[in-house]
Image (cartoon, rainbow, N blue to C red; front, side):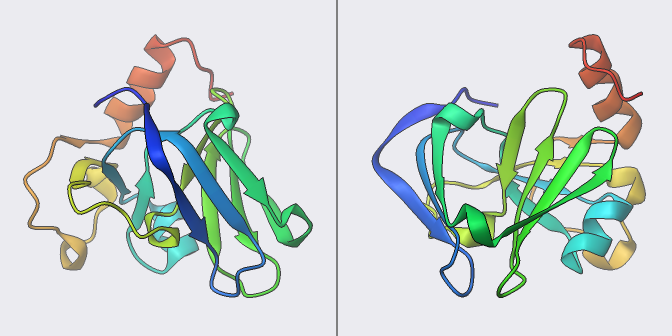
Length: 151
């Protein structure tokens, strides 16, 4: 996976009603898919997101419309309190934010480049893209090896 790169022009994204907007100044080109049970319940399907970014890589407006939900000790999910659009998943130990890919009109060369929690993927959500695939145990082991705690 590539490191975040400067975006010129920045990518602009928004929720359905436009109350919340996001401006990405840096990003890791590509899209990650999560098949975990929580993401499926939260999105109603597979979670397509941009790779996690540090807060300095983006600007958010419409903060007053953001509804935040701590879905676990280590994760926050956010949605627009006005239209209900899902906005992001945040991995709290790393301080990263993974925005919903559908908020943006992404460049054509940004492809699906990783699938995680494939061990929780129902058969009807299998994707044709040939990407690296990781189980939940592999994702958690990598995070723990990087020094992050899930306690």
